Amino acid sequence: MAISKRTWTTPEGRSGSAWEVSYRDQQGKRRRKQFARKRDADAWLVKARSEISSGIHTADSQSITLGDAADLWLQSCERGRDGRDPVEPHTLRVYRSHVRLHIKLLIGSELLSQLTTPKIANFRDSLLDTRSRAMAKKVLSTLKAIITEAQSRGLVAQNVAKPVSITTATRHKKRVNIPTKDQVRAIIEKAEELTSDPQPHIAKAWQRYHPLLLTSVLTGMRASELRGLYWSSVDLKDGTLDVCQRADETGVIGPVKSGAGRRRITVPPSLARVLREWRLLCPPGDLVFPNWQGKVETHANITNRCWYSICDRCEMATVKRVKKKKRVSPHYTFHALRHFHASMLIASGATPKEVQVEMGHSSIQVTFDTYGHLFPEDEAMRVQRAASMEAEILG
Image (spheres, rainbow, N blue to C red):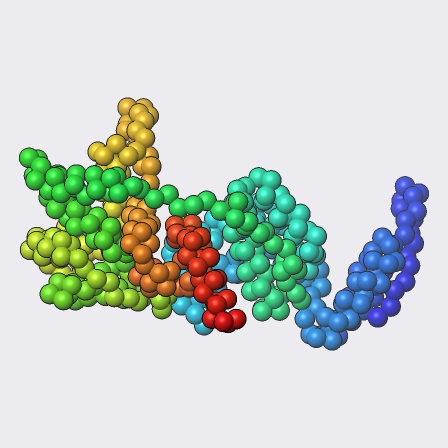
């Protein structure tokens, strides 16, 4: 390896110069790279020697772009990275939007071999200037995963994005939007009222949606878990319900999101009664809440036909007319019923660990991050505990 100074004269008579690094890569092939300053050439040569000795050096002429690396990463996510299961369709769609709308648009043409930490920092700053903080953090995480995958394939020596981060301070976190007890009560009462609607098609629809909404409120199950629930997992005699599977975006039944997602939930008597009545009307099959053909119900149908409709009827939505079409924007998402269940658990005196288990959170940190502000803080009790500890230790 050597550094030499090259000079030349252009056809127009202008002179130029550059510092050229001449070296052989790990395959023994001669390579050259030019720099405007000698100190840049020296610094690069030190790095190149280390990479070549480790067998991970990639010349610029052999490097692919970040956009191409992103495509490779998406393919690995689709087939399953590092021997894991393929990512779910919804997650893959989110990753693709990160790549298409943010990464390729802003930095996709950069060669992997020419990526530097300062360039990634500039990319982060561009995200923060033009996107929400939450979206910027997700996209940066995706970028790090892309470069990690490229590194594992020997396409780049190191993940220069690792030192770059976006912190989410408490002031940036939005608290979950939780409906009140009166609002939830109104939803359940209206849904039950609609099961006896004079119009047969409306009554038939809400005979299915009423038990679905009530189950969501009284168990806190995720929509995917409700869609994948089997009758064999429901014991109405003992009043228990086992959550052990879920339906993904495409309707495929599979395991729950994590090991902690497997849990047993108590079924209150009122819910057991409604489920017994619903079972007599439910289409034949294993599913508790199927569509009328007995197949897995889509999340879009639950959202559009059930949730948007009930929020509109209970005056919990903003309604606009756009080109004579009615647009309903609910004040809460369907997932808010899950948040409501968690808030009722906390209000009833459940400990954080009990809330974590019943909600199926992967860790207690998830529980605190989501519902930490709901747990009561008893200053008097804290002072009393401190005094008790002092007396016990010091006598």
